[in-house]
Amino acid sequence: MNFYTNDLVRSRQQTAEEERPAHIPKYQTYESKLSILISSEQQKYLEDVVMKVMRNRSRKKERITKNSVIRCLIDFMKTLDLDLNDIPDEKELLKRMFIARLNRVL
Image (cartoon, rainbow, N blue to C red; front, side):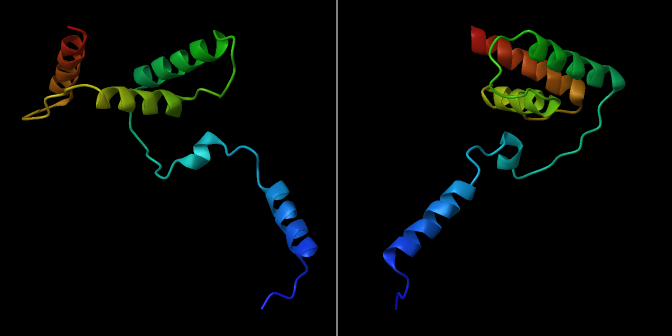
């Protein structure tokens, strides 16, 4: 049983739509948080990459962060035909990534 007038219902719907944010920040679209251990050299390199990207661009659509770079690396890794069998350590994993990247180009 609807006892609201149509105008009242419409005005409440318009108010609700106006209160919604026009843009949802990208970080709010992700579900999982991850903490990683990296060397100080790796951290410095990551910070340098972010700094160079942020300084050397003419279009500023969104902020590029260390998280952005890591997410892009994961997405890039997903494009590789990576042999994940019998990998004993990080060195071998990195080697397989290089091989998969080279094979992708050829």
